[in-house]
Length: 209
Image 1 (tube, rainbow, N blue to C red):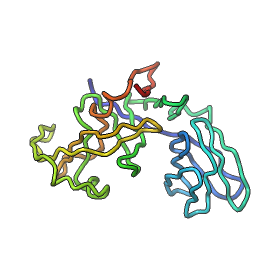
Image 2: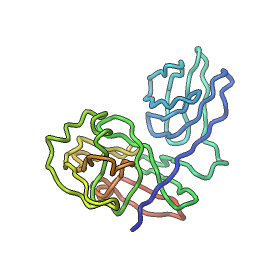
Image 3: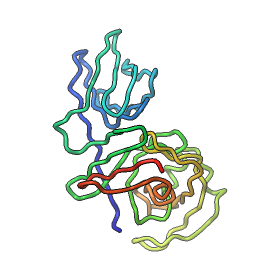
Image 4: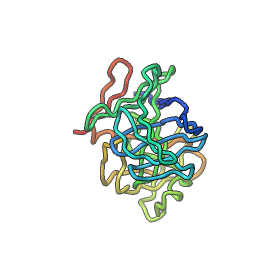
């Protein structure tokens, strides 16, 4: 099955506080917000450098506070491409015009961008990304991977946890590519096989098993 990529895009109305806020992801207890052009991953009770406090969040709305003033923000119903946690353990990701899927996620608690790839055996990341995550990939199992650009050196490692929204999978096998072969973080089957996955009218639906 070909690689699937999607664009997450939630737009929130500009705040009356003079701060422009755009939601990239909303989930239970956390949100990825674009605040005056800077992307911030906030959990409930956290405040961004711009002074935006995330009071609460779920898959439908978030309550933020700026300068002591609170506002409840709902997801725009006019945007087609969206990411939404519609229940306790379900994530919906709409496809882009090209039929591909991208999603925000976490590796060992750190935010990353994933390309959903049902044709990939493992979660796959580049060496530079692994280093930024503090992963000692050279202590993993060395291997040679066949790619569209030829053979690439890689290391097999175990990630403590990988999550998309509130769906967390522990002890996920991953490969770290060395060199310029990996331009995307691939969310492969070492994660996807641990969740339920289906396509519903062009929307990729992930849910907990």
